[in-house]
Structures are given as structure tokens and as C-alpha cells.
Amino acid sequence: MASWLAGAAVVSDAELTVEVPEMEEISDGDVDEAIALCGGDLRKTVKALLIANAFTEQMLELSRQEASQGFLRRRPKRAKG
Image (cartoon, rainbow, N blue to C red; front, side, top):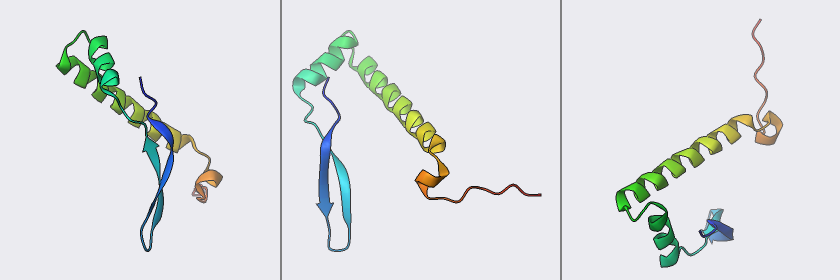
């Protein structure tokens, strides 16, 4: 299947510049492959994609929690006492 993040594009506004990941084109062949992997059942395909997305979101949240405080530029929480 297609790689979801190929590079980065810069979106500019008068006051804002944001780096947005550039998404690789998802071809009809990629869609056909996903459907074929689910036995041709579109409902199963959508369910599988939703499960994969939820898993990715959970992994992203865990990564955020595991990132060091210095990397996140936050002060460590001080123990009360």
C-alpha cells in the first residue's frame, strides 16, 4: 500500500506558516488492494481502516506521554511535600 507521508509542504498565510505532511497519492489500486485484503467486503474494509486509525491514534498518544519533559519544553512536575 501507499506510504502515507512522503514529505512536507509549507502552507503559508500572512501571519502563519505551518508545515503540513504531504500525503502520497492513494491510487485506485491501493483501494482495490485494501478491499481485496478484506475479501471484497466493503464494510469489513471500512472497519479495518477505522481500527487501524484508532490504533495509530493510541500509539501517537503513548508517544506523546513518553516524550521527555525537556523535549516537550515543559518543566517537570514537582513532588508536593
